[in-house]
Image (cartoon, rainbow, N blue to C red; front, side, top):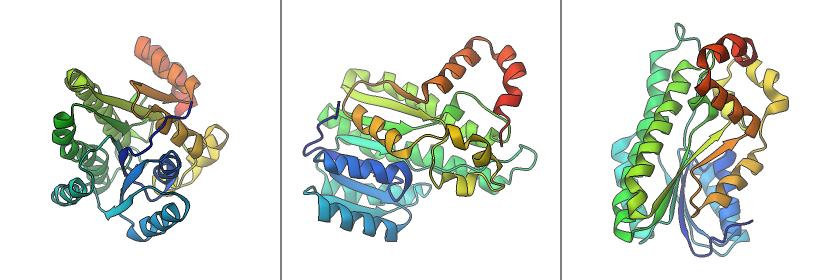
Length: 264
């Protein structure tokens, strides 16, 4: 059932493309006001113009690389002047690079942690005082099935998503008594431009194309969960069953599943 977001104030990072852009359209369609954040200001300007043309909400854009924690503080100070209340923060900004551990460039490893983990934590810290004062709010962190099942050629990327899940689960327990909801979203591969960077050789996309998730469907699941007590969204369901089996029988799973998951 479509969640009513009329006049709710929602912040989405990584909003210039992929599921971030699709979430923006779905939220606007349901009456939300939006702050959209991304590095690519040109794409944000196009998105903002289209949202204003089609919908009646209040739409603001900010250019930001979330790995720059000083700039995060500056931008979110501006956001607080726009939104006196923040109902939902979606930490969607992130990227991955698939490399074997011995071949991974440390600059890329550091960049993934700076964006996927430190950036997410930094943005969350910026809205927490406001949400604690309000005594309500919803933080949605886009993690990954890679945070539950590590696979070959994704050691560093999986490590960032393990970190996101650890942070999210702790945050949920901390904020429960304050009536602030926290949701982790764990999708498998989504058909977006994420793989233009992550999959340099193109082999992963070729191998898993038939299993890739529709970004519109993923975005709808996330938007439907807004302001609900949803703990996790795991997509696709069959892949999440793999993570449950892995948690119960890790040695067997790694032995039997190594060929299945070595698609990169």
